[in-house]
Amino acid sequence: MSVEFIIQLIAALMLGIGGIFAIIGGIGLMRFPDVFTRLHAGSITDTLAPLLIIGGLVLLVGFDLLTFKLLAILFFLLFTTPVASHATARAALAAGVQPLGEDTRETGASTSKS
Image 1 (cartoon, helix red, strand yellow):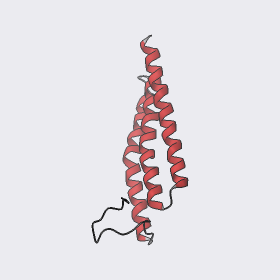
Image 2 (cartoon, rainbow, N blue to C red; image 1 turned 180 degrees about the vertical axis):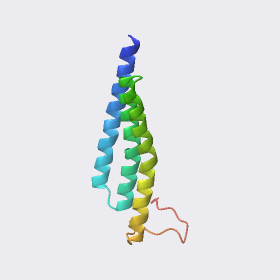
Image 3 (cartoon, rainbow, N blue to C red; image 1 turned 135 degrees about the vertical axis):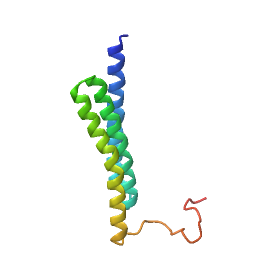
Image 4 (tube, one colour; image 1 turned 45 degrees about the vertical axis):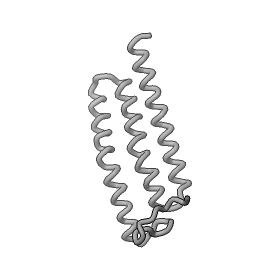
């Protein structure tokens, strides 16, 4: 096996796994009950899926000007996605949206059912 084949194989795996994470995130956005759990599903996969997809594309492109453009896009996404998620959650709280589940701030109890 040549080095090029191994790089293409790793890139294909990264692209495939990144696509799977993106699909799982989309399913989570449709299935979760409230804005906060949907936001969690979206923000986690919005960071991990592009990381894998752009990483796979960088491996395929090699050392080129396009590599720097892809890394700039990745850098932008890695810093703006958490900020946007935080701003969305704060806006939802400011609008009066309450998370589903019981409030455990007073007792410090866990929300898991044993």
